[in-house]
Length: 318
Image (cartoon, rainbow, N blue to C red):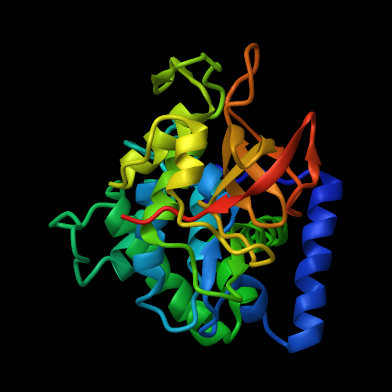
C-alpha cells in the first residue's frame, strides 16, 4: 500500500530484525516486545519525541478497539508512512502517491473503504482517508483482521499492510523502540503532557530568564512552561521548584516527567531538567550558547554532574 516507506540502513535493519526474531523465538509471539496481549506500555522517549501528542493519543484509542494490538505498531506505521501526517509528499493531505495510497496512514481507496466503518468518535462523516481519526481506526481494523488481534500473527498483519519484508522489519523495530513495558504505574497524564511540551522545544536557544517557546528558555523557565501546559503551576526558579516538591524518595525509580535537580547542595540548587528516560536521560536548557536538548545525568544522589551534584527529584502534582 505504501509509497512512503523509508528502508532502514542495513545495520539498523539487521539489528531490528534480530530483536524481532529473538522475541519470537523466546515467546512465540511479539506481544511482550511491543506491549500487546494486555501488557501495559508507556510511550518511550523516542515515541514522545517523534509522534505528535494528538497522534499519540489517537493511536492509543484506535489500537484499543483491537484486543491485544499495541498502539506502538500503529504509531510506527504512521511514522514510516507519513511522519504522522507531517510529510508534504503527494497523497498525505490530498491526492495519491504513485501507488494510489492516500492519507496519513497511506491506504489504498478500496482498502480504506473496506475498514472505514463504523465512523469512529471524532471522525469525518462520510469517512475520509485524509482524516487522521478515520485513517487510524481503519488501519487498526485492518491490522486486527489480518493477524494483529491478540498477536495471532502480527508479522503477517504488518506484511499485509505493505507486502515488503523490509517494511515489516522497519515497522516492528520502530514499534519496539516506541514502547516501554511498565513495571510500575505509568506516568500521569500531566507528566506526559509536560514532557511532550519540553521535547517539542528541542533546539530552542538557552536564554537567561527566558520563558518564550521557540525563542528562548532557561532551565527553570522550560520546566515551568512545560508543567503550565499540563495545568500545573510551578515556581519560577530551580531552587523554589525543588523546595515545592513533592520529592521522589531516594532510591525510588524515576518516571518520565519527573524534575531532576543539580547544584552544590539542596540549599544551592542551580539547575533543573525533566526526566525523559528513567535510566538517566533528561531534557533541559543547559547554559548560554546551548539549546534545549536531551542529555545524560547520574541517577545516584550526590553523584557528580559536571561541576554540580545530582540532588534528587520531584514529581509535580496539581
